[in-house]
Length: 455
Ligand SMILES: [Cu+2]
Image 1 (cartoon, rainbow, N blue to C red):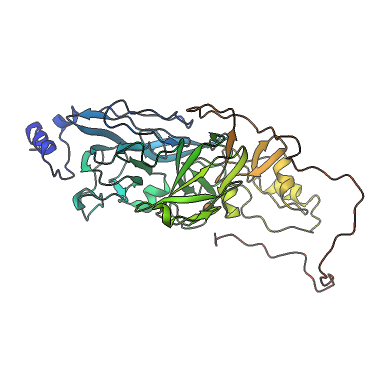
Image 2: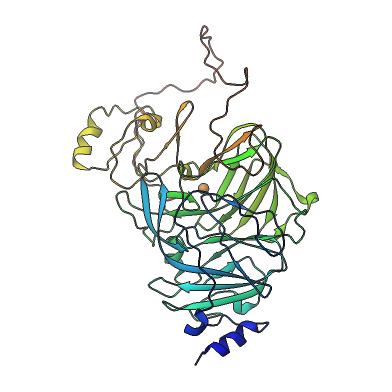
């Protein structure tokens, strides 16, 4: 009964409900571009429509559109995908158009967009346009504003973009499962005047998290807080792209949080301002300088700074969020002589790992035997050896020589003479110290092993 004529009539109406597309109507679907590579796509300039300064999605890409009678038509396909979380580990996730996170949608304030969503999942889904001002019937809440998009069906969402800013999309259907499986993406609305809010580099990523047992590949979907992979766009360090910039560039980084906890995002070597929040842009007079900004659950933040030469860590400041899967449940072994114990236990429990008695850095330099398909807890190699990081960590690499529009990894920073910490080789002097009570027989040097559910 939903024939081609009624579809076309519906598509031409100003207030189109989220309507199922008929088989005949599906013949006019825009091409669904797909991409499974996790390498960063250079920002594509808009081929038509209003001009804008394109976004750079870390380890991601922007979805091409088709311009039809002045409407930007996108085609999202919800489907199972395989995502490389970092070299050495792949995960079975759900996403859009071959990737998780899904592709970034880019459009301009005032644009009318028509977004076709095809469901290739084994259950119903929907898409909620997180943060957008739109007609209630386009809000994508299954049961409340629409039927779920049935398996194999396509729905159409159509609305005018009323304000510029950083937005996200995700399902509002079986969302604990569907978001735990990686269904989410960014939706960037650029200002009408491309000179407004112009920066030299505009990066974006989504904070997400997975609970994938070492040796397996599919997330546990009922985990509430105790995730073991903390990711940006479903990538963990050292799999996260560096953010390359030229010295003096005005740099914006947009961050959206679709995990179950907050993430204080911290940048070294700069002070920045939060210039954008969930509701839009922050007036200049209301900004204040920061080095960390907390991105709460469901929030988006845009930060801006003037790039200073160097290699600068950018990371979540919850230290457990800069480590990967292996080793999360190890007891504290500081000061405990456990020589030989680990080796003997490892024979019985193949993925057993213990904390070293002098701390855990030694683990970053050891070749630990790992079960297949997982990531060491702390990893990455820099010019001075093991970086000992995982999870939500990357490096802002600022150089005098990076060319405008070049986002390739410029390699490691060469520090100007006299600006690098060095090892002191002179005589040790007696340092000033606070007086502390001495350890005695009542001092415990072992702590009870415990989990880490309180992230
Ligand atoms: Cu965090």
